[in-house]
Length: 368
Image 1 (cartoon, rainbow, N blue to C red):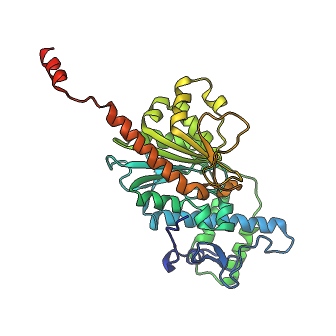
Image 2: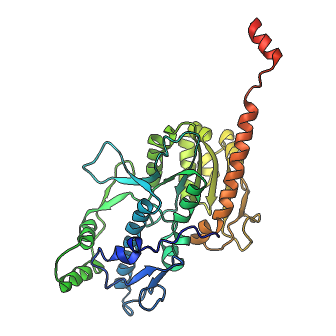
């Protein structure tokens, strides 16, 4: 896979980002020139069992690292990829809101292609395919940034959805913001705050975010208020895991809009169920047959036809890996080739449907 990005500048380093919190002593980690997470002193990979045989405390530390990575990748999306952060719903600003990211001019650039990224269900937010893959395999494999940069280089506009940002935990949010603030307190007090966060125990007290209570609601809102309003644009989707189920839900709910705007969907190890979601709708079944392709985990080489237990309604090929979390990065180059071919085919069909003026047709019009 071509490596497009090396975010090793001092201003965008992970270690610089951690310095803004009170967790610097807990996390002496940074991403090296290969975008792999390594200890800044020993160069060793991340160690989960930091506190020997204290599972609960190590789990809290792992969660804190995940939260740091979440915020760090948000920053990279804005500063490295130059994407805009868009809060939804737009008319509300005094309650917890979700958000997504999109390239500048994504809604106004005429005759450009829009790529929409929709990840699996879990703790990971916008810009992540897999948090576990980021920690253990690096940003090239677990983040969406290589995909975004590849799209931008191909002159696509990009929309990065945030389907798992459904609730705000007010109690945890207060603790977290306290740690991220630059403070003038003594080092001992800072350490005490960090210890408090890492050992924090409380029942989940989540406040739903309007228009983003579920991944399905989040995606439908962004479609209705943003993607569907793009004019003269061809839309493609990359969906991973549960994101495939969410896309099929959107297809059923916004049938004609989706079928007319979306020219290709790349599903990666998807959780969708055609029978349960699309039923026997012949139009939808015909549409996915010609506009969808799935890459699944398999021991076979990339792009080889994959064996499936059930009959598939569209082509299914190997992602070139047996790991679900690595399937997006493994199949990325192949997916962009598929998009290029699908767009070319769509353009050819569109042109072939334009009536050609002939002398006889002109005479018929004049005599009518």
